[in-house]
Image (cartoon, rainbow, N blue to C red; front, side, top):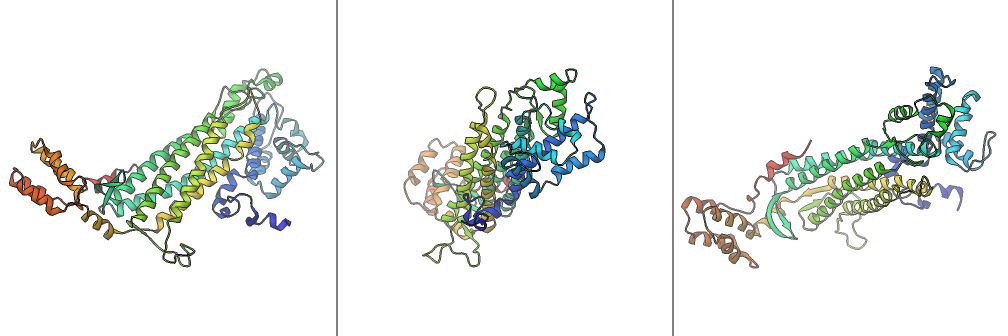
Length: 463
């Protein structure tokens, strides 16, 4: 394999960086290796600035120096990432190889700053102080800047479908069997509402991400040894909060990661809603309730030219199922540690981006699928007309209202396991001992109009 091949997506080990690279690209600024380096630089720089603000330390930084420091992460680019990697793997700029990714970031900042600030870079910190904050900044950015907007767009599309088709009647199925009719719009509203609720949980979990900065075993020991009179707990609380994170006051060397687990579980909840919808859309397409707009030049089958397959919903289902498997593993794994620290979670957390990437592919594919569907109102209405037995529920309920104690059994005898017509119902109505008003009410029943408040329920989608 040549060097050119190594950079060719066709030679990528993972489809996330190969076949789907263009779809996962929006996540690269948040969850790539370079993004992790940048986040670490941000934490180290802001910590350095916070130390300079302490009266106890002799460190002083002018506004210009602070701006130059912040430019290290604001303008972090491929050259900077390459230097950090070289400092880790082979050494550079007078530094020997660290074989330690956080130490490499410290040395990177040294190469870009005056020697007078070098003693204060990473002062009193353990790597996990930097890492736990960095991973949360990355996860927060990926969720809030990439995943949430995609989900909001999907929800908006569902709301639009719900409004447009709010009064289009459709046979419902419970246990796969014909059931009380609904409308296509109402069914889309259900998914829009579910998506809104689960999305709110994701946003809440992202808002609750929390970080620690308390030293090698969570006791502030090095900090107190250097400056015993500083209120390091207050310093840590203020610093972590300044990064947009909640503060964890009690931890070992490791931030326990219960907050990350809650975020992963919340994302799984969203994904479960989307997968459920993907499968329903697949079935609606199979039943011809939904058609699909064709794409010029696209092939549905290598041997059957007529086919227009529901590939977008299928692809979404597969990717979101993979994402949920990864998110379940991550949520279970990152909350455990041998005593105060072990490194097994370090390699595991590098896969957070992969889980989010499968989410992103799934969301995009579902949106593509939603953009192609065309409700086949003729097929929906024809199936309703062909299944008159579904008004049986309405019939027996009206008869119960009129005091008929055998209403359910009367309709069951007529319909269960039998093919019936509206005329069969009309014959039943003719023999009933009911008022003319009630008889007219029964005769007016049709499958297509027996949809209750379905069209009004569309307006109940949460904002």
